[in-house]
Image 1 (cartoon, rainbow, N blue to C red):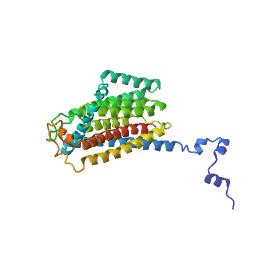
Image 2: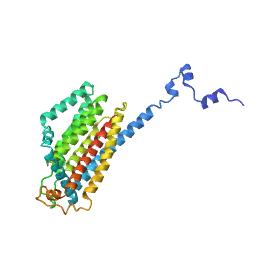
Image 3: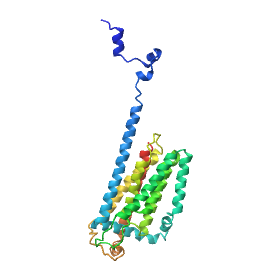
Image 4: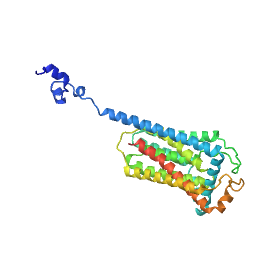
Length: 322
């Protein structure tokens, strides 16, 4: 028994060409499936960025508590700073050049440059996002520095709280702002330049005994959270894929080396018992008789810094420009 034309029309999908010949809209016959993957991709990327920002904030909170409020954390944080300070004699004061570059005129000039780049690209909103990110990161750093109190636990020379580092916050926030507004061809080099510059600033403030390692890392993590929340989600072709992969590979390698070097440096050593408040910041005598451990601790501090800074810059560059 043959099916009637009516039954055939109700069970088969009309081809777009037939629909067009009969005056029907192709859009009414064929659903625009191209929009669904984009919506899912946007939602996935948005959730991933929010999750990364939350992870950065939680990491900053945990690191702040361990390095400030615990005896072992204060000891390790201070001994790593003093280990890095021992390298200053070999640099001839070159690190002071880096720290002295963070001045109000420099900050204003970089902010103007970021705004000009965004305006030349006709991205006024993007310029606003970048400047709000810089302001938010630096204001939150100063507020946190006033709120956090460093208790004297008897293991280090008593000093006031220095967490987080304002110098590092300025450096990393300006670098990320440039990454946010940079055109496609400049974004990869900006990410690498920002990575090197922020690490140089972090090492410099430790060499000058202005900040401990936790001060540097918390500043970077807070700035990274601000950047992930304010950098726009752009649907454009990925740029510098090879450079991004190399950066992520170096971050992973540095993270593994940082962990192993730290374990070897403190293996079978009572860091808390080695503290002698008044001897430098508490560990000058210990480090003078343990030069190999001192070098391992300094190397570990540098590797932790490179890994965390690289992770934050990679996250902003990767998640914001897929």
